[in-house]
Length: 297
Length: 320
Image 1 (cartoon, rainbow over the protein chains, first blue to last red):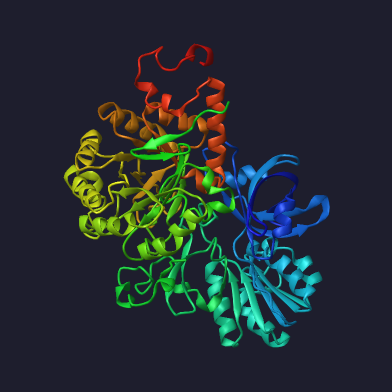
Image 2: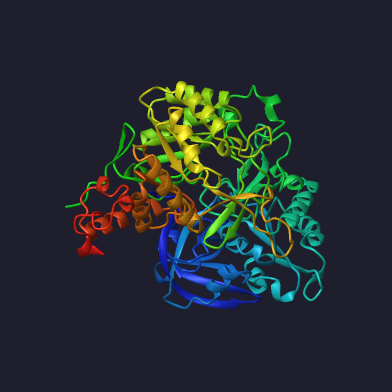
């Protein structure tokens, strides 16, 4: 139906492999590969056509390659029956995939210095981003953190792609003992960074945003929220985000995100409806705004 | 020869009986990325209220066996945005529009109907009677025939006479036929059945309700037998009232089931989330199954399950 938007395809599995503590599935999906931009994700049906497991699983795209007609790779951990089913797929099995979904990371027009900060498997979308930034002549520095050494994702690739790569673990089993944000400020200063890109759990994104703001540089964050559809229909993945007009809206992370400017996300109010959000019970005071301002998404 | 799929909702004719259900298709714009929305019978737009509404806090959804429990709290941009942006867009794409309305009082429903029924391209107004109302009494309108009738009456008296008004009923009420009868007596033109079923799921790790609102609405294939039963029961009592059947439709065969129970059209809900091209797949499956059975007109199928054995279809013995 469209040139740029998402497509729904039945994709043959090429490989399922273990990568550190995670699984990676590569599928042949030329339509998705050619549309993909870093930060976008796919949603994957699990369990087969008559499965009692209805909802798709969203996964950030980790890698796109032109070989075999266009392949797409995504990363996951086995967390429940859906991901367990996925981990049992074999080469040539078909997966029903919708993608690429969501807004990608915006890329700088000029070559600037970029820090990419990720936590655990949340670092996955930062790798295709790093390649895009490098192609534009940007300096890339990685800060990757995780609970333990085996959950720091793709340290070798990070070292290869980036100017510098700093690793942190909660248990000190690899790299710096501590969190991503403990190392981030230092990297920003050393690399004279102009912008931070980040993906990972919400508390990490909040801290990363605070560090970037303290250094006076912009930050783009890709959030991970529970989604039922990924296509903008179900309105379940909303978070409070402040618009350019200063009005807070409950926006869909699947369609209006998953990438947002960090300082626009009301991290402390995620999981609530802020009293001053558009359409919240206390909102009526602002009613004089015009119609275009009143869209919820 | 391909079967005649045309069907009627009161005085409105649809090209085919496959529609989307309210709250499961946005305003058609999101789904239009996956298929031509003019191909399906109609799009039911997400329940609209007079004012923008932020809805309930997250988490709003939990997966359940063959279903989904959700509590979004009718988040939406309000009727102005529907009339100025969403509805004109849907019409411009050749889509047919069933507009779902939700309000906190009969007066609010009436005001919505007044503003919507004058807009070009509104084929049907559907009344969402399960609105979480401001008095905090939960589904006040859906549970009480008198309240429901008051709302239907308010909408009917503010709606152009050529726009049919359908009341959407919830299945978990003490007297569904009584409720349906009250809506029809209040000059409702038809019924939509069913809305989601009240339920709860508890997160096994936290031992707390999995959606922030506590109770949610259960939808998906898990509720299909409940929905089919409701349609069957109400069609038996009110055979001349058109019904839009919905609840867990996943395949063309499921549409057949609702038609046989007495629905004139069938809305696809939760499966749109799982499969954004579900509507056109279901339509194709329906055509195939009708072809296989030698059924030439949808109209011949409606209410088939109520007829005596042997009288169901012309060549039943050959196909079953």
